[in-house]
Length: 296
Image (cartoon, rainbow, N blue to C red; front, side):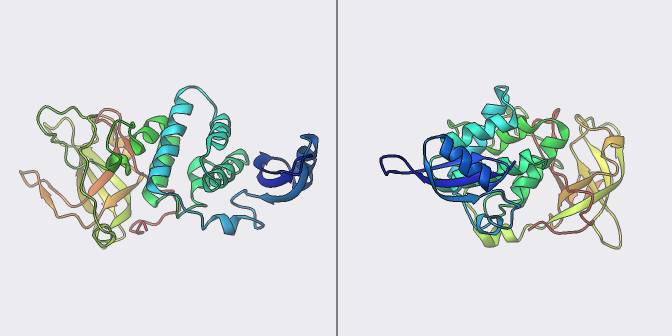
């Protein structure tokens, strides 16, 4: 059921603005009249509706707004609310019209049968590709709340750490004294040019095996659309079996310098995942994504 943004006048002549859901614009106007208001303007805000979708694609939110909304959604779902109820609550609590429009459109898409990740794709200026990929992985694995919490750390942490956490699955060694799920240290900001140097590509895992005498490591053979498949060593063994990874489309840092683990074991890339080492969530790509396709 799509969402509608409306403006209506009260009996005293005051302009009232709000958001509601209805099967059609006609039903939306009827609901507004039932509330004792006179409809002035009613606009659909479902992201896939040609009457409003293209306009809402241009909406953007600040990093702080995205972090706050992500944190709130994680808390509401964790508290036992359904996705529909969570979006309803967020719409009511929205601090500005831009947030309200985005949330209402997402709610309409999800109620129409889309996954949350698919709904997010209608707002590429708000939700980056990596953010959407991690949400899709969380939905597929049943760990959406955990992923959302990782994407938006608690308020007590510096806001600089609110960007999606990228856990190196190819570097299992941790700093001494720090558990796997310890909050990441805040990083210095980087420029767009710095980020543009990182090549995130879709990789198809064609084979996988355990590394002898290494409890955390798996050796993956990954097709990146190149003439020869790559070997990537990843610290995924405490969460995944080799059989579970074979056939998966993962997100790979493709231009990372090789890492030598000794005894002829060299890793040529990094598989992205998030979470503690015994409950990792992979950043994955849909089956329609070709091996080697670059994330933008």
